[in-house]
Structures are given as C-alpha cells and as structure tokens.
Amino acid sequence: MRQIIYIFITLGVLLSCTSCSNKQYQLLFEKRNLISDSTATKGAVITEYYKIKPQDILQIRNLQNIKYIVDETPVTVASSTVTSSAGQTYQVQEDGSVALPVIGHVPVAGLTRVEAERRVEDIYRKNLLKDPIIELKIVNLKVTILGEIKAQGNYTLTKDKTTLIELIGEAGGLTDKANEKNVKIIRGSEKDSHVTEIDLGNLSSINDPNAILRSGDIIYISQNKRAARNDNLQSISVIGQPVLLLFNTILIILTLVRR
Image (cartoon, rainbow, N blue to C red; front, side):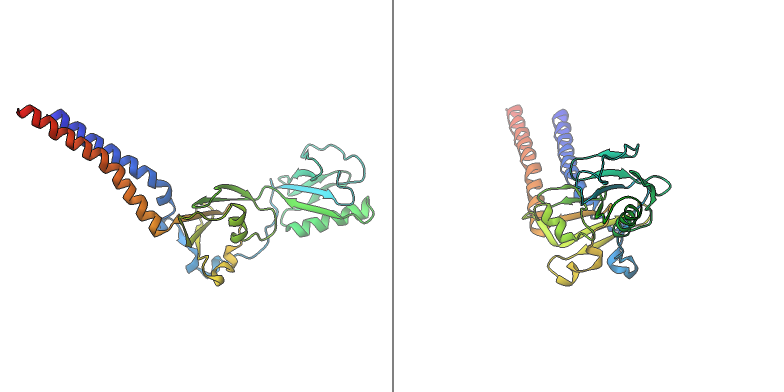
C-alpha cells in the first residue's frame, strides 16, 4: 500500500513539473524585474538611423550595370562574396573600411546607409564611372519575433526605420490568442536592456519612435487573458485526469484487498 501511495505522489509531482515547463517560455518575458520598462524612461527613445559598424555585411551594386558594382568584371577580393544580380556582398573590416573593386578601401564605419551609399558613389564617379547609381544595403540587421505570431523567427531589416506593424505583417499577423494591447520590444545588451510596451489598439502608441525596430530587437507577443485562462484550465484538466484515474485505481485496489 505504501508503494502505491508513493507512486501516486511521484506521478503527481512529475505531471505538475511538466505543466510548469510549458509555461517557462511565456514567463521568461513576464519577469519585469529583470528588465527596466522604457515606457517610464523618456531618454530611451531612439530615432537615429543605424550606423555601420565593423563586421557588418554590405550589399553593393551599380544600378547602371546590375551585374557588377563596376562596368567590367570586378576584381576578386578576400572580403567579398559574389551573389547573383542582387549585387555583391562585402564585410566591413575591423578598421571600419570596406574593400571595393578598383577603388580599394573606403571608410564607412560610423556612417548611415545613405551616407555610405553617397560616399561610395562619389568615389566611383571621381575615379572610374560616369554617373554611377550606387545602391547599398546592410544585409545582416535582424530582429526576432516570438510568441503569439503566425510565423515566429528571425527577420532581416530590409529598409531604414522598419516599424513594428510592418514586421508583424511580414510575419503573417497575430494569432487569435495574441494580446494586442501589450506587445513587448526588448532591446539593448545584457547589462543595459529595457522594454517598450506597445498597445496596437492605440494609434499614438503605434507611432511611438520606440516602435521603430533596431537590429537585435526581440519582439514578444503574449497571450490574452482569455487564452491564458483556457490554457490554465487545460493544464488543470491534463493533470487532473491521470490523478483521478490513479485515485480510482487505488480505491478499487483497496476495495479488493479488504474483501
């Protein structure tokens, strides 16, 4: 009899732990004490364009000739990787420069995408090409979206000042369980991170400069109260059914033993 009771208790504890483990992912983003809330800090608003850094990947092409950045077969350089007609990619080196065909190293660190685009275009115009039209993109900027979204994952920021609404649209929209009134944008480093809470039902909140995404942002969309309540009830049901089954089994065994 003691063994039966021990098995009953053990299974109950295991089932409870399993239910808790399913909630860890959601609870990770609910612990506000780990991250300060930026909505209470006006200084957290960031509206500047992204500035190029070492190790960034730049995609550059001359729109006058979509095959190459120059009007002839480009010189092979160690930092470049050839891609189709979308252009070639070049990595910004530790000294802040990017090595480009013919014109050599061009300092770009600290510049915005548009500023770097103009600098490269000006250098090619002065030294090699007639009226070049240079297109420059930063292709390694990514954000992560998790939670109640139809397509979770990492997304590339393909344009300057991509908004939260644009990213949600790209990810297929919110699920039926989403809490659209409390979308969290988590940004910053481990030592200096903060959260912006966006209410998608509030137009002024949607237009908040903090809703403009930055590389490295994590967007988390939690469940609404109804969905959370249903999940809790389902968890209780999942735990309760085997517990009741075990309890009934014990009662049957006790009844048979007494006979």
